Image (tube, rainbow, N blue to C red; front, side, top):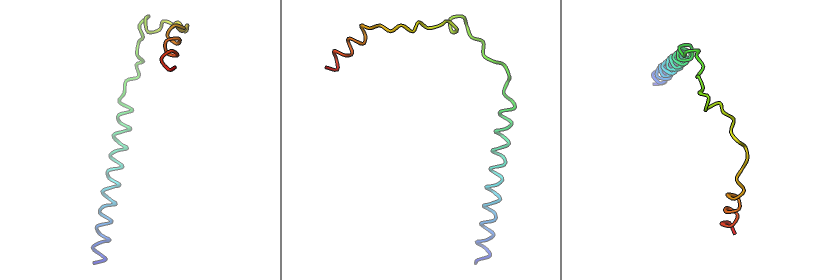
Length: 66
């Protein structure tokens, strides 16, 4: 009985190790297979956003909270 349990544990360990090796292999292959191209941004995407905030919006929010 004890020998059978040891065999089952060994088989589960081999199966687990095989799954881990395949998982690592597919992850590495996925990283290597990615293209090295960088995305091209449009001029509108690179335009600097105006950091000035609208004070009226904050005033209205303040009125709601009171």
